[in-house]
Image (cartoon, rainbow, N blue to C red; front, side, top):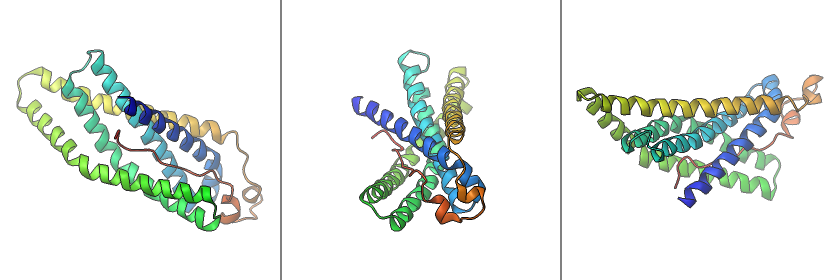
Amino acid sequence: MQSMAWILVFNYAISWWNAYATGKSWAEAKAVGGWIRVVAWAGAILSAAGFSTVYLFLIAYGAHALGYVDDQSMRLALSFGQLGLVTPLLGAGIIVTLESWRRWYRHQSLLSLGLAGWNTYATAHNALSAFEDSGDALDMIGEAYAGAADSKSKAAVAAFITAIVIALFALLAGTLQTAFLIRKYAATDPMPDAIVNRGGGFGRAGKGRTALSQGKADMR
């Protein structure tokens, strides 16, 4: 339980950092477009997915601990959240990993190498976790749906709907927090002169961007 708490704190901190880094480059990315905008959107997705993962666990486990939902609803909510977040997490993670290696190639340093290495590990770890866990999550959801469809009991249907609501609420909360933070930090960073004067290209304008990083998609 203590290790799970540390992972939640770590993922929350990484998600906040990604929102901050994305916000700092948002105006530039919007003006320049191209790859830099793809990376900015990837950072926003990583941030939103990371926050959503944290909120999903807190809401699901909290509601279960307080007796508001049963064990089945809690596990279903986690399964719905996992399946809903795995694709954007992996896609955005791959983009951020490629960008971190590109940054290391252009501005070689021990810090950029370490970040690229971490992002590579996080992408591989998240991909392996998705491969191992998605099948079980699909089976659980399929069994619960079949049980709710065949059952005459309102409890089975309520458990299924409750799980969906928890997952959607966590996703909404994570997305809204990311949007708020990006807007907040974007408003504090002036547009680079190279963009304002239209005198610089991607390389010059993008040199000072803050690096993005990844958290862990599971709680192991």
